[in-house]
Image 1: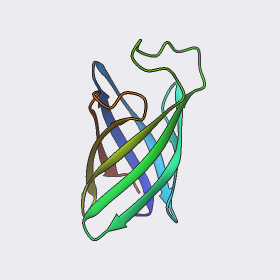
Image 2: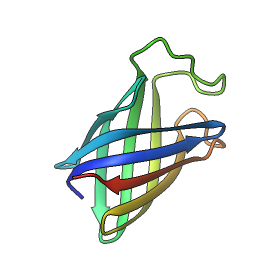
Image 3: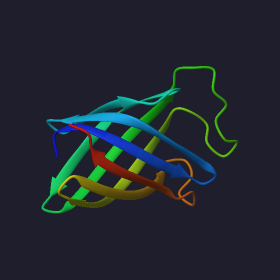
Length: 104
């Protein structure tokens, strides 16, 4: 699981992509207007992550999400592809999907 990953995400009407480095259980990354920090765990083909997303540029968040936001995600890892789903801590009814592709 360790390495550089390309992340494509959707959270309700919001879609985007960024890069994340996963190493020793830690997540560090970002996109054009946010930083990602957090932790992950692997259990066989199962993947669990808690990710704090913070804006760093003048970016308006969707009305239903007030930054910073922690996302609770779980899913599967198969080779160079991982798919996780979950929700923000302050909005359990908002579905978040993230697809990760190993970049390096």
